[in-house]
Image 1 (cartoon, one colour):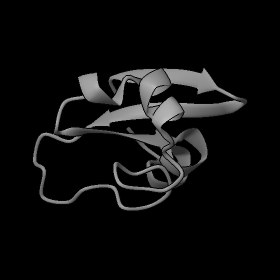
Image 2 (cartoon, rainbow, N blue to C red):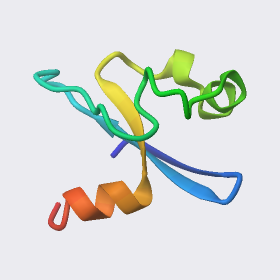
Image 3 (cartoon, rainbow, N blue to C red):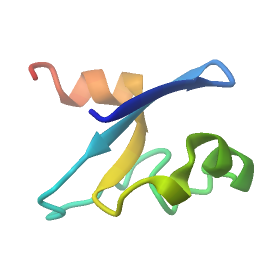
Image 4 (cartoon, rainbow, N blue to C red):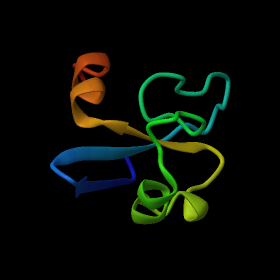
Length: 67
């Protein structure tokens, strides 16, 4: 986890994935229609490294029960 932000009542977590073997392809992925230009700007997606992606905290805690 490299960053976290609350935007419009949703909690987003930025995850760094150095292996790049798989990319997050669920809600709010890099190509999702849920990522509007405004949200991309608020999350600073252009500054996000290629190996990083944003996901909702609910998805994060569902996938990663232990860190």
